[in-house]
Length: 208
Image (tube, rainbow, N blue to C red; front, side):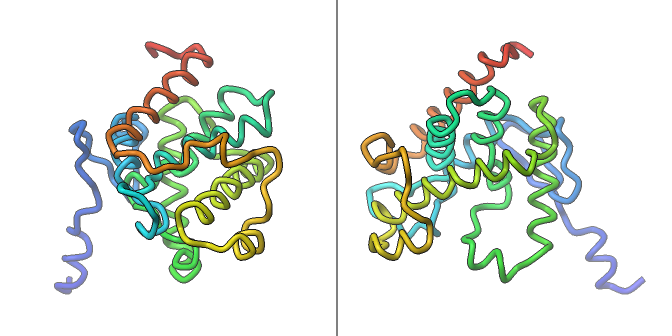
């Protein structure tokens, strides 16, 4: 066996979490997923590669809260399960980070494969389908785009005309409805955990 092959086989593919879990990135187990790790990680991952205004990075945790809020505004009759999948729509990024869309298109399928495996493990950990349906994924994406519009114009330096072209003009949601000012990581983390607990209570899974 060549040295390269030996190195490839022995290369570490897991990450140790603060909870003590060791999550295998290539073959993630739902048993190694903890919401505390997700909230902690997402609150410390910056959207827009950190190119945002404010004293704090705009975190994926805060983005996830806004997306879930936009989703709920657009779909008031949505189920708690749908809300939870929306809140967790970027959860794999607690392990792999937030890669901006232009770079995702360059990296291609390998990134998507790892992301899909992590999504499945996260969803199964919390009693959700491994992946959202195509219809739900489309709805979540629309809410994500609404959030991106306000993030782009309020934080990332995009002109209104440019943001309209890239993301479209939001309907039914205004800037005043959203907590867009970047939060400290600890506060974003806590708010994410609180919203997760609220949705879990709606699902009747508290103490599961």
